[in-house]
Amino acid sequence: MSEADKTTPPISGDYRSDVHNFSQFWQQAPTVDTARAARERFLAAHVETLYRALTNDLRSFIRVERLVHDAARAVPGLVPSADALAAENVLEQKAKRGLEIDHGIFLAHVLGNPTTGAHLCHAMLLPRPEALARLDEFRTNGKIELATATIERRGRAAIVTLRNPRFLNAEDSTTIEDSEIAVDLATLDPESAVAVLRGGVVEYPKYRGKPIFSAGINLTHLYRGKIPFVWYMQRDMGLVNKIFRGLAREDITPDEVNGDTIEKPWIAAVDGFAIGGGCQLLLAMDYIVAASDAYMTLPARKEGIIPGAANLRLARFVGDRIARQAILYGRRLDCDTPEGRLICDEIAPPDGVDAAVDRVVEGLTGSGIVSAAGNRRALRVAQEPLDLFRRYMAVYAREQAQCHFSPALIENLEKYWNAAQRKP
Image (cartoon, rainbow, N blue to C red; front, side, top):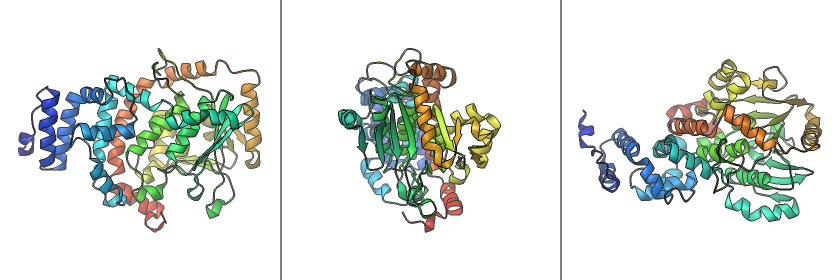
């Protein structure tokens, strides 16, 4: 046993006593590694007790972005305080101390526990209050424009358009809430039977005036330290998982066997490219129409991060070998190739994507789609039940936190993205 280990308080089994003793220890722990080892021990013993205290014994649903802050107040030293985060958030990524790795450790334990993990997944699948507040407006007007997303009803389809034109419709902290609100509204809208996701027209000089699906995570913002770790969890447990699973109800579990969800089929319209997070979104879709010149990539190796839930989902489409080539070696998948067609359902001329989407919508809704939700649930229970997703996200939380603050991330962004020269 090391000298540092000897100073770590023992687990007494009494929650209040251990909170007191470990909080005092974290204020004076000799090393970061020693403090983190103590957090692992504390959470292994008390994560369910802590989570129940934070959620009023599972009666309240708290999203991940608030949960980590509530945990900081409940158990000082377990995760970074609001003041510590505020000081860290003004720094560029390479200057940060990696305090948010403790968010990853905390969320890994919450998700690793079947009871608390299922409850947190449930919380992240509930409609956002902002969407519920604007649902009547959308039902009446058929269109809402948010800062970085729009939603418009066209016939029987609710069309969500992602908009971050300067950054090729990349995802970042400025887009995450609007995108999720738009997805909620499209799912809740009783006047539409299907939902469509597409990217808007961009300003980037090379593609100016053209629609682009998505460039994935905003690497410029990532390099500049503008994307917190919890963003990854918020995105994949909220925005992406809502497309894949639908919206939950507070009084009913959202799992496939005993639960219920509010959902409808999702169609993606892919113009230009679906890079990184854009490709991850496609793996949650029911039908994909892609332009013949479009392509998909998962450049995780060059970015130094884990590509969301692609490690869980991509192999179902293209098989294990191609999935590993795409994730570990950056293989590009052109949509109009045999490999690309394993993901994309229909290829259209670049100027014919809109017409093709309209035909798909008509084909899905022309004779009614009353069985759509049931078929989606039946597919999920065979491929990716909610409990499998929970366990995946437990691993993802811990590993992505380490990747997000790894020196290799900065090296990759400077080498492959010329990040130091790009304007934030």
